[in-house]
Amino acid sequence: MKFVSEEVIDRVAEELGESEAVFETALNDLETSQPVLLAYLFSENFSLFTNQEREFLLFLVIVIYRSAKKVNGDLPRIEEDELSGQEENNWQLLQGVKGHKFHERLDVFFRDQPQEDLLAFAEDALSDVEDGYVTKEGREAIFVAVKSIIDCWR
Image (cartoon, rainbow, N blue to C red):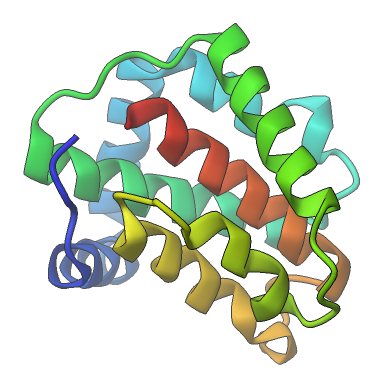
């Protein structure tokens, strides 16, 4: 996958945030072209999340999907076994981290990451727990989910 820049991501996030119609179109596109991914986002894995966390995760994934598609055209369809394998690898990486602060714990994911701006977008969006969208407990799980999805499109 070609590199997706911060500029593209910011533009897409702005477009999606400003128009519900654009968001709905993007969601329909995701549902049609990535059915396994959409099923994953609504699976039991995220049943303990608050409604705001689930909506925020969906927003992050749609921004990433639409940004990557804008740069690369149609993306390969994510398969369930691939996604679960990436997720398992990412949880194992996180378990080996010694740091206690959110940003310190995520550093391991940025090593040799060709899509650094996509990851940085997710990290920045999840950094401010006072915004009310994401609980402190949900941040890492959402980041791992987003990272696993990005890894499937590498």
